[in-house]
Structures are given as structure tokens and as C-alpha cells.
Length: 263
Image (cartoon, rainbow, N blue to C red; front, side, top):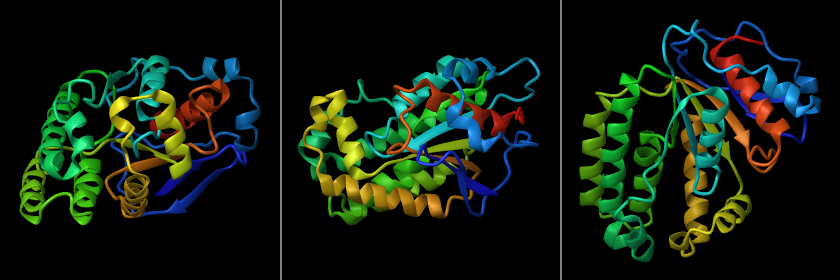
């Protein structure tokens, strides 16, 4: 098993070995011509990337992971549109704790994390009952292995609250299954800050740089030990899927290769 990394700096797909379990779906039997991926015309790339067909036996759970500002919602939206998947987005607009959390992290950290834990647990339950393939914006594992531990380590969540949170997650994890494919959006802090500023959410104006940096470190540590399924890594500093159709086509081709064995 290998973690696949997409970058426009070279047209190759880099990989490093990790311990990982096999996908429930069939693995790719062949790979694309890596030397020409970024050179192909956008329309041609997109035209040969069909959505889930009637030949698919089992609906899949695809998830997009990444730090704040990595572009998870954008990629989830684009892939749902191109692949005809059902998108499940992170509950941001209706979250009753998010604004308060960014104003006073220490006071609201536990409340926020419990809200996200409950919200994402319900999402996973619905995903597994969905007859269509679903793409999810952020996973329940990121809350448990990155955000909650980071808040605790920064002194923004008490040990009592953190232990309570972890106990609840450990119980919930017995009733859920991991995604069949995890797409990890990796980005440097400057790239994250740039995208956060572009989208202009008022409550994100107070996000601290050291907070983003610590989250990035935890994401990298988590990915280095991830053993729950296949991973596709996309370097957002080097590939602009939001504005460049060719780059989006590269991602779609690689996803199809992983889950359908089309290439």
C-alpha cells in the first residue's frame, strides 16, 4: 500500500510506503501515463472520467481531509458534481458554537468538539445507509486525532473534558467504518492563510497562526500512521483544482484509477 501524492511541480505521482488495509472495492489494475497527466487538455481529461456506473456493486464512502482552509468544501463540491456523488458537508453555517469558539477557545472547546463528534457520527450512519457513493467533507477521525488533542495540548481543553471526549469517541468508533478512500489536502500555513482570507468568513479572522501550524503538524503525524484505508495526497501549494480544470482532471483520473481500475 502506498500513499499517492499529486503535485504540479513534476508530472509524476510520488509515493511512500505506509501500512494500510485494502479498500473494500477493487484496486486499480493499471496506472495512467504519469508523464502526460498535466499536459492533457482539460476537456479531454474530464470527458474520459465517468461517474459511478450501474456496474458498481457497492456504494463507496470517499472522504476529504485537511486543515482549515485546505479547500475541502471546494473539492467536495467539484467531485460531487463531476462524479455524480452525494456530498455531505461539514456543519459550519448552522453550528451554534463556532463563533463563540473562535472568540474564546478555552471556554467553548469542549462544547464545539462534542457538537462536531455528534454531527459527524450521524453523518457516517447516514452514509452507510446511502445507496449512492458519498463524498464527505472532513472525517470524524480528524476531530478525535487532531482537533481535540491539539486543544488539550494547547491548554484550551481540560484533561477532564478531553478524557470524557475520548471515551465517547472510542465508544462511537465501534459502530462506524472508515472511508474507502481518504483524500488528504496537504498545505503549508501560508497557503492555508491565503485561502482563509479569500473566502472571508468573519469568525475565521481571529484564527492564530500557531493554531494552524500545530494542526498541520498533527495532520502529518496522523497521516504517517494512518492504517484504516487507502490515501490519496494532494499538495494544494502545487495544484490548483479550484481554478484549473486540468488539475481537477488529474485528481479525478487518479480517484477513478484507485476505486474503479479504469486506467
